[in-house]
Amino acid sequence: MSTTLLMVGFQTDYFKSGKMPLKGTKRAAKKAEELLAWFREQNLPVVHVQQINQEEKASALQADSKGAAFHKALAPAEGEKVVQKHYPNSFQETDLAAYLKSKKTSSLVVAGTMTHLDIDVTVKAAKELGYDCTLISDACVTKKLTLEGKKVKADDVQLAYLAALQTTYAQVISSGKFLKKQAKEAKKQLKEVEAENKQQAKEAKKQIKEAEAENRQQEKKAEEPKAVKKPRPSRAKTAQKPAAAKTTQEKPAQEKPVQEKPTEEILVQEKPAQEKPVQEKEEPAVKA
Image 1: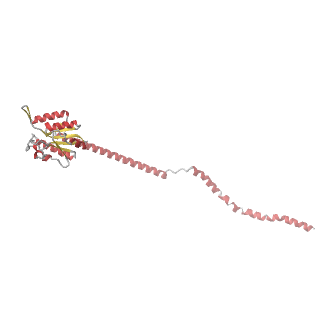
Image 2 (image 1 turned 90 degrees about the horizontal axis):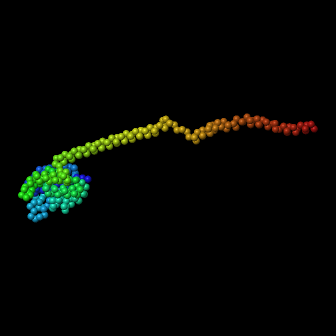
Image 3 (image 1 turned 135 degrees about the vertical axis):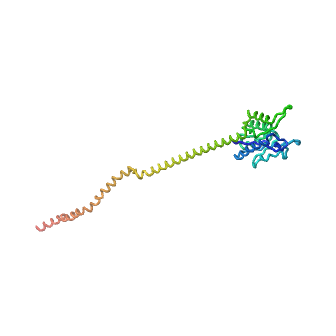
């Protein structure tokens, strides 16, 4: 949610050369300029409300008149919203509420003219619509009033209305205090962001160290089997070893046929012993 600056009725007729000059308008405009500059620097929404009197015999702020134009120092910049109103209430029969909703506005900072009328009813309407309002006391102006022949000074009117609004409808604060508060909050937010960035950098550094340590551990584990541990032979390999030994021992047995040659010679020499029966047959013939 964001904050929007609501600039109400900073129009030429309310200044010294206009048809309805108010007390202190020039001074209030200077304070409003500072607010406007700050909101523009922060790229926050700004709305300029322009009062247009539709009556033909209106004494001031007539349509298309110079007096109805915005003061030069506070004229809308390109892209800034302009709302034309015909009643003191800036929300009455205007698209102001719809625009604020489109900008997701949750709070308003209000400055302008006139404190006892336009500012008063606009702030009350904003509060009833659910907006948190901050009213810049020295960026608002009004005029003297008369009741039953008694004159009420502009300063007294200003003070009375600001005091009444402060109780229920708005936080009333000077432009200097408002800007100082914003600067303090901005500084605080900057410190919080820096602290958060510092913490994130610290955590990232820690994660990098942990990752490096884990990589070193994995590299060490990968090198251990090669340098220190030898794989134990499996049972299958262990069982095959005796068979290999037997095969080695049986080699001499395969060479025996070569060593048995003398045995064959003996057998060859014994063949004449088998011819004895032949010789025995010849002896009886001689005796005859």
